[in-house]
Length: 393
Image 1: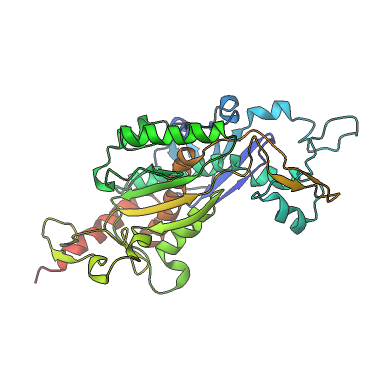
Image 2 (image 1 turned 120 degrees about the vertical axis):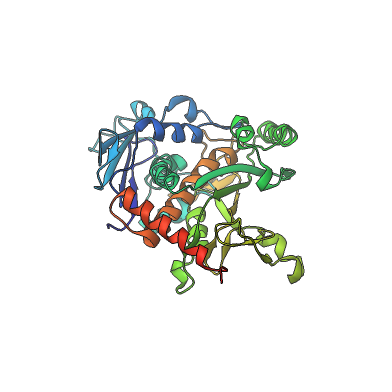
């Protein structure tokens, strides 16, 4: 079995994005249409910027799949950037003359990667940093995550997401276990009820009128995960740690909560721990009466839904720019402005789902191994069946 890993490459306004996914077993049904459906979800969202009107994301599979079935070899994909047609000189791989507009950026945007990146890499043109730091790269992650999602489906794991807060507006009136995910998918702000939908949109409209941006919190949930993904034996094998790192890698994310982690800090221990009771109807032979731990205990999945809440800050680029400086001259200027979203919370949800899928697939392949989908499914079935031994004596 090949170790699971993935790589992305490409710039925001370059020709496109390259994705390579390695470690997917042979025998998995996979189509470009399946991937495109997931990628299209990243392009939706109330308060999205103009880039979404230009791009029509689609991942062209270049290797690793034949006749709709994975081969077990690396899967390579190409995502074209349609906007590159407007940037052929500015993003040319070859040297260009001084008579063309290179779209040089020297005005720092507070809160963006361009300032530390310019100093770290010795750049005098901030575009050399911001092109790769752009959230455009998440299109490639969603493509990779779609393949991971497809494999997880084979062992009964499904992943969903919703917006639970936009600015100061809270949308947790519907509990996670009661969410109608069809309602969420139909909402432009990925709200789980009509009241939250209206309040989230009003908050975004208010921010747009004020020429600023707004952040929020989104929730990613995995249903059907078996007991035992991850491990307690080393820090870097703990599932919650791996999920936290993956979610934190998403652009503008500044906080992660597993289950009700922050709320738990304000409660006594008796109200926080998930009490376990016998339950022969559960495949584990036991069940927890609550899920405050978010489906992970001691760095391992415990069979409950895995719940991760992700805090994402307002986007740094605003139509009313903040004061800043020129990276080359030190002159006080207004920060640069390039088109951007007013609110990216809803669009970040599918990215969070992709990162959840990528982490869970890696942990699943570590647990079950196998070079083919059928082998993995046999290993998974045997492992789940072994749980029936516990509590039977």
